[in-house]
Length: 635
Image (cartoon, rainbow, N blue to C red; front, side, top):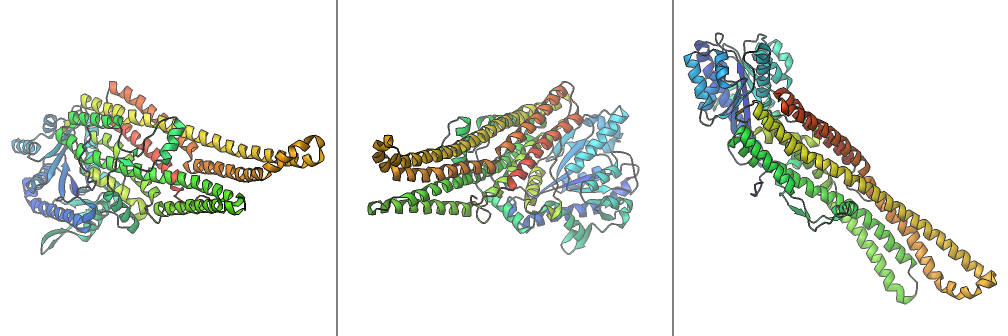
């Protein structure tokens, strides 16, 4: 069941360091003794930086101490050295093993001391997570693939990589390979040489001359601190965007309450009329029963797969942040869409009121009617101006906040699937080049950064459980949603087109009828047989002129309003896009059903990422369409 407590959507300040490095015999006890002070200084410098990140922008973070996590595979030598120093300083340890732990210990050929250190780290209090991949230690190719997979997960779950590396190239899945993965992914790498020198690597080209990189840490009066280069590299990854508009949008999102209802009902009324459904005022924008049941089922599977701590983190952090983003998107989306519906309808009604004022009879007793018509026309125009001003780009900016919050929600929800497999696949922020939407990518990554990998062995049963979560808790809901979206968009497009046409045809009928009346009126003077109608025609002359004027101009105005709503909503494009996304999701679902019979971790990762990519493509196309339609005066 969804947590009813108030939501604080701000992320907790979190820094994750990955570790990779050489094993014995290259890392001997003497080398460990030489490296230990440098490792401690580096960990202290990173801890200090994590605190500085929060202090720089406290409104963007929850009021909690920085959370520090170390991610590594616990091999003898460098991994164990860094892990022991980190846990001694209160860091959580997320251990990612390529095989089941006993098989890993055998593959490492631990001596008695190393085995004792390994077992102690696996059972360390506050350890974090212990994820064992399903690698086959007996098969050379499968063994290499498992080491590579672990390396990818270390990089995906780290903000900075600590590499105890001699600078030489090695095999796939080895230290040099993981360093290359990190640099290719844009992660800064702190390279510790076997002599203890700490250098910073920032680009793939830096691998060629790792000894020439800038210093990673410096000594200050207050103790070890990150160098200016390391600080800049990590702040670019960890700190909220600095652009004025992006930072303002982030704070607006974080500070907006999580609403469950909205009074903006006109668009929902239009949608439900087209679909033939009843509606309620105010409009309910909380997750429906099906969505709540799917989240509850997903969290249950997550607990079975990854343990109670893993599921609790998803329940208290990921789900509330998604729910908040969904609420903000729904509230602002209803406001924006209802605003343009109201604007077009009120513009048409203002035309009608103006026409009534024009055709009002000129006798004194009709003066008040004319004043009333003009007053109604002015009131409608003033309301349109107020709505556009309040909700437009210079006001609450419903359009912009809707699109951005929807982006957050639609990235966070499918990300839960790859989390089941120990991957944090989140969009990367390419500096301020992303401009005003930079905060969306930053916020998603900051939210996912809080979530440690599951504690489990990714065997066939665990993979089937993850596949069930993808099929039943993600795809089933999205397939239903896309079908409904396709149906409603099609009905809206058809209904608005049909009634818009009818109103224009009605105007033609009115015009033809008036021309017939005018012809009959003139014939009544010339055709003796029509003389008895003359008195009736004279009496109807003024009302007929008024009706022809009002209906002849008013009906096209109403028709134009409907066509305007249809154009802004672009329901035909929405219908086509929903159909395309539905086809893609159904194809992925069929592949997942087949995969469930013989689960493969690598194939499951690919299909989970395809789900995210399909939904991201739908979101991208949908955003591209609607980003060109800000709230503006009807024209």
